[in-house]
Amino acid sequence: MATTSSFLARGKFSIAIVGATGRLGKTITSTLSTTYKYQFSRIIALTRDESSDVARDLSRLQGVEVRVVSFTDSYNEGYISRVLQNVDVVVNVLGAGASVSEKDAVLEASIKARARIYFPSEFGVDHRNNDKIFPSFDHLEWIKKRKHLKLADELVKQHGSDTKIVSIYCGLFLEMVFAVTGLDISTYTFSYLAPSPAPPFPRVSITSTQDVAHAIASLIPIFMAPQDLSTSLPTHIRLAGTLHTVPEIADIYKKVTGEEIKLDRKDVSEVKEKLREEMKVEGTEWRGAPGGHIQIIMGEGMLDFTDNDNELVNPGGARWVWKGVEEYIRELQQQK
Image 1 (tube, helix red, strand yellow):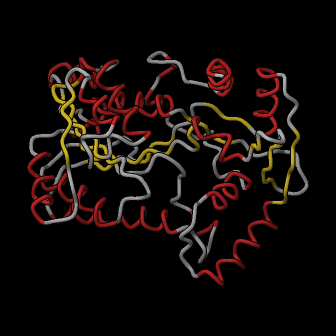
Image 2 (image 1 turned 135 degrees about the horizontal axis):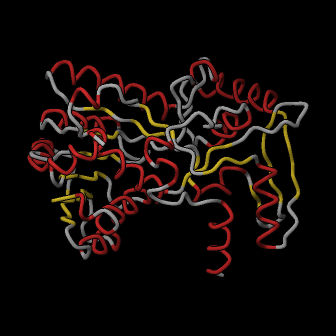
């Protein structure tokens, strides 16, 4: 009740989405400007290319301001800071293609502008314990993410800022679940990792980009509450739109499509050791696609977000209905 009252007293919030034309950024921007438009006074979509089809689509949304931003010169570093002045919330959804310096520039500008909330570019694996899963052979992208979070803490202290750093981990994106879990449509085969012997099979957290957008909208008024109310909140948020094992996903696929799925299970410990040996050759920081690492994390049960914060963002499922695998497959079938 106190959180709701503080939200009503505060009025609408201003928000900037950095990387707004990416897959997740586009969904966040469009969802906030439609379903949650009552919650925001300004929605600023930052992109490198305002001429792209996605940028033009976003510019047509009521209340969305599309701004071009570049990280190639000092003028634009200052420009980011100016754009973020008087912005309450910054959502950094710059993808893996963005450099460390670019993501850090957004972070520093957000803190200097005294944004109330900063969402770093996470939205995937909860990598905080990866040093235990991949001792000396973690993926470079997660190493960079942890350095970014460390820098965030340092900058908050350095500038005496009240900015809250709120990380969201959603497991696998529903829209990419088949590619990551190993479904080969041409042979209708699921290749996946699990402990040997199996079962039990590890469960995997799967969350749609739309549900991530809902969660962000839900978290903002909660973290904008007075300091004494918001300081006790978790700043690492784990979401689980749905939880399934790979065999369960195969069963759902068959139920919807009628196609029989073959399961090709491999021992996760053997694959993990092979990756360790490969990285002795490649170096200590793996720079390729993270798919192999993600499959190992899945196979070891580290993407099972049974312990999650769903009730914080969507108590009792009253605010929205989480999107599931079956609904997604039915949508794909309708598009054929």
